[in-house]
Image (tube, rainbow, N blue to C red; front, side):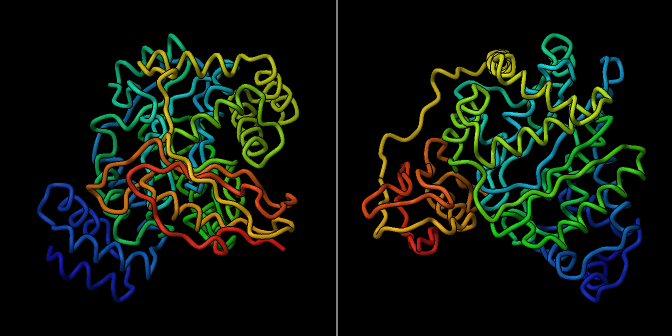
Length: 409
């Protein structure tokens, strides 16, 4: 089929057939379709959307582009979780050890950051030595031995998504609902999940900025789950403010540790992690949410979740004692007295990206030690001269407008 005709058809808002989608996406994977043509198709999809039939077809094409993992020999219901990405979202680092410490096998294959939203794999790579490239054989053995794995996608698991993911990141097509749905669900199904929990972020610091789009994505992923015989639950969570206090890879790992050790007990990060863990435990053990929540809280308070985290890091060759943040810290102070009325998650994400915590271009290298730590949160009282946030700076010291980040009245 002629690639140009396929692109033009979608540009005009028409429905593409399975064969048309198969041809152009596999052509791109094989190197026969250039970046600029696939970018044009992705933008046409972003603007015009896709029908349910197109999305089911694209999800199948993604799944069939590589291997499908089989963990049926591992006892227990395998519950996977995914977040659509947000500023300061380090929930996987917290909930995976919580759930695994309660005897539910957790096999988590995570991705890298998209745009200004950080990725779990980027955060884990800030831990010196941590392996994110486990083979299927190593994954199975580790789950049998430890009950938990957090790794990158295996070499041939949905390779289509890897190349499309990277292109979306630099072509302003990350927020397309059909592309988000196909990307997430293809990986979860191919990775052998029995049940799937999706945390859909909505707000100015998320890929989706309004609840209507979040609801559309929720409905769509539930439909894809039904199509493939998987139970899918979704939670729509707020991303108008950053999640927790830290934005940046090593900083977020440190914050995750604080939550697991019970040091952060009253903020939106801890609350969301408890909610997500409760749903996963409820699904995995087939018990009520009330029972599940009691178990989740107990595993944090008795330290077993934190111990599971340490064993995970050690098993995957990470040295948590060598985790480092940038030594150069700039303290940003309040210009006046007042109450913090708003913290703009999007602007914080952009600032962190400019510091070097993410990639602005495909070939950029991430600086794992940079980022932002908030000292004052929404509704906090501040005095003139109080430190609002700290910038951990590496090679880049970007300009910013404080009024764009903090609103103080």
